Image (tube, rainbow over all chains, first blue to last red; front, side, top):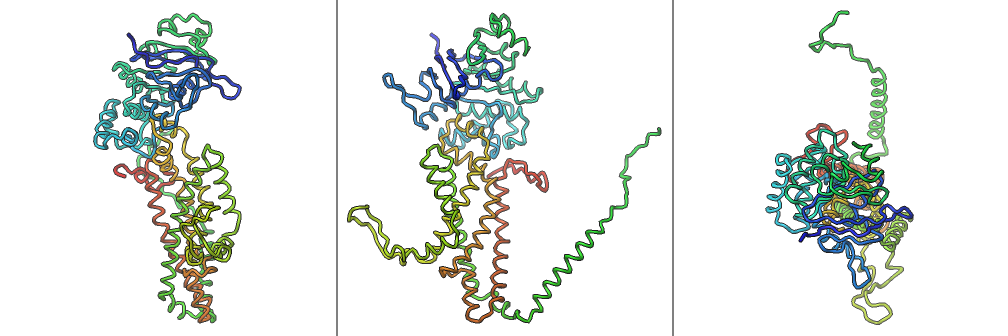
Length: 254
Length: 298
């Protein structure tokens, strides 16, 4: 029996009258890597942000780890969760941002250990050990005392990955993690992500890196105008797309 | 064309002359010297009195009061200002209105008026009590003039007024922090309060400290307004002395000198704070690159 990690059921999101997600349904199983591709403005980043409730949704349900995100259902009535409950739900979902969002006033190591110490109440000495191990895992052991502004974009993004991993998440969300990087720095970040995938981490990656999607993804989903156009293995979607819109998009980016 | 090699520092040029700098420097020096001379030679200023009262115990006592009242007021004001700024940025409309109302009220009326108001509170409300409204239950009561002596009235007036101004400074600092910071904190499971305390405010401090240094200096000078409710700070002491010996100008010079000393000295802790909260940020116009980053312990 497989273990469903993420279960999104006809997720809808509106900004005013602009419906950016028009019923997205998909599931991700434990250990799976799902890559989301699509043109800019298609809603793929918004969908990712809905998964950890950085954005609230207007319709549908999102279930992560068997828990309904952001709401409690009593009978047929949904109740908004308290911020503290949402914070607890987010602890098991790591997120990596396009623009890194490292805390600039803290060193790399301090960035990584801030949440374990402050949120999970791990002892400082254990957190430091964990932080150093994680920085070593992303190849930045010797940069522990550097501030984000002293690191290259690629190094910053790897610290950001280590920071997310420090909370021992069961699911990792990547929001265009390499889009803000110089081309020669993309490889290091992708290598770290490949290592994670190999180690069995469940990952959802919004990306424009088709090579990465082809190599690492178990499933690729193409989203356009807030709808899933095509979903399947990388071979099916990237090499033999059935839909005209998918073909047109791939022609532009490949 | 022959190719020449430049492998030594062979630019030895005659420096550009700046004659106007000399003219300007000469005029400025002459004016300054003239001013010093006119003060020194003025028959109306008795220099011996200036020297005599420079270290007078009453003056030094007044300075001490000025300093501690300034520090206490700025402390209360900063705490209140942070609360007001967070309230003003709150999603709760009631909190926003309350904060806005407070700020409008205390910015919109003159500080001198507020000081006098708090000083005369005893006339408006002769008795103060804490109890449950519309019942006879009273936990505590007393005479206003005893509960709120002049110095407390002064501290209340200065703190509340300053809080209103500083709230906008703190709010600007909070708004200057990138929204991605809050998102990153949220995604790590941090609560709103924790995010504010550990992520947002430390970064906001960079923006807040320089204008707050200004406010600190302003506060130090504004304590002189407490003379109207007879708080024994520096200016009150100086004017009390001068009303006895009629040496007004001399004592103005004495108190002015000490105000200048105190505001100058206050600049040093400000620079130390700026360095502390500048951690991790490249400083534009920093003297040397090594200064911009301090690697190591907090």
